[in-house]
Amino acid sequence: MQKEFSYPLKIDELGQGEQTYKLSANKEQLITLAGILQIPAVNSFDADINLKFQKKQGKLDVWGVIMANLSLVSVISLEPFDKEYKGEFKLLFDTTAKYEDIYTDDEDINLDLPDIVIDGKIDLGDIAIEQLALMMDDYPRKEGETFAEIIEDNSPIKSNPFAVLEKLKK
Image (tube, rainbow, N blue to C red):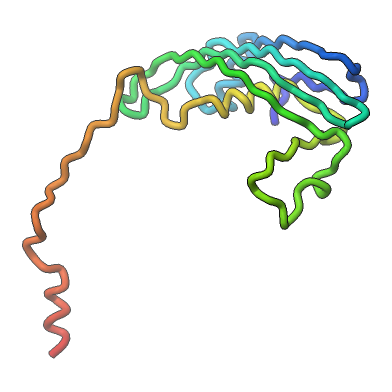
């Protein structure tokens, strides 16, 4: 995805036990993250990510917590505001499978398929950014703001738009 907030890990170098990683973005990385997320600013971004590699099964469990303070613009008032996000996530990676093995044409779309490890690596930065993007509101608005109802004129149409066509029948 990007390289400014990147924490790559090689799967082969992971131990069998549970491992914990703490990610925190510095000032330059916060600017980069705001560009990636296409928002005015990221004021803070932290992630606590845990990994548990089950080598025999070829599975990698990834879970953690994402915390961020974002500057957003309300879609209603167009005023800037800050919003805190904090959320948990859980992912499962299959370290031995290839894309073709898991994603076939006749797959059931409702299955919860594991993610694929590409080139034997995962990037904790990419995972953290993706999880924050999934938490964000599609249409951000300040607390208490609501869409105003638009009252339309429901009176019947006074002139028939097809009246011109009546003349063509003759």
